[in-house]
Image (cartoon, rainbow, N blue to C red):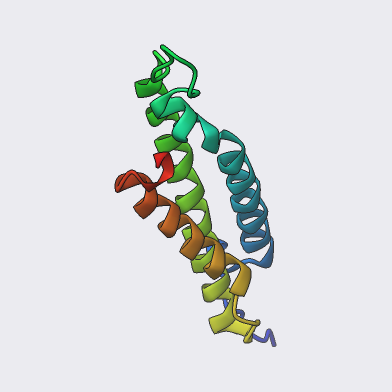
Length: 120
C-alpha cells in the first residue's frame, strides 16, 4: 500500500535563499545609492561656491539616475521584508530587523529627496 504524504509546497518568496539573496541585493543597492548621493547634493545643485559656478548642466539626468536607483533599492528592500515575513509565518524565523530598518532609511531618503532636503 502506498502512503500519501502531505507535503506542503513552500512558495518561492518564502524560501530562505530568496530572502537572503534579496537582503544582500538590497544592501548592495543601498551602498550604491550612498555612493551616488553627491549627484543630487548641494554642490551639484548650487555649484561649488566658486565665483560663476552654478548647477551642473546635467542635473536632470542626475535626478533621474538617483530616482531610479532609489526606486530599485526600495523595491528590493520591501521584497526582502516580504520574503522574510513569509518565511517567518512558516517556521517562526526571527523578525528581519535589518531589512525593516533599511526600508525605513530608504523611505526617509525618499522623503528628503522629494522635499529637496538633500540639496540644502
